[in-house]
Image (cartoon, rainbow, N blue to C red; front, side, top):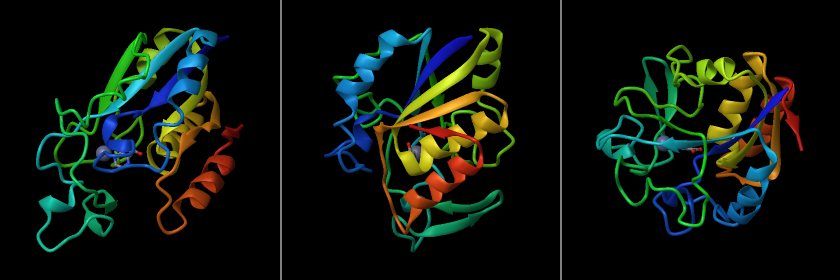
Length: 197
Ligand code: VGL
Ligand code: ZN
């Protein structure tokens, strides 16, 4: 059994002072750093949007952040501009250990957002992470990071559906929590067979 730690989007824009700050997003960094040595593999994900990305409210006339829009692939929440490729906001929190095996970037296609580390929000375009894990013989995943109710949630549910043994360590996650999204995410993860610890 090969067990990987997947660290989701611990980037400046999701930490206090960032463009899409998650309350206490930075508080989890020491715990995540300490966990890394206990795993066979460590993988970081990085939200990585081009300027003018379709998930940005600023790309839609008359729309404000946290409103929604209908995209060809379904309903999309609109966000403040965040994690623009190469920006300081897209960089990992400066205290996060980056001595990881793999950094996987997502959300780099303008027309489709990607919450999950496995599939873009159209739920069909793969990021390549599944192939990486399978070819390394990794079957067990523990996920931590930001935000519990968006990227951690969709990554964990996709991983469980793909047949990985998935746990989410909630002590090393923090949520955006808009309109009950945290409770909905916890329910969805539980229903998908994700172990919440
Ligand atoms: C995320 C909203 C937009 C996340 C990324 O990492 O949870 N949330 N982009
Ligand atoms: Zn994003």
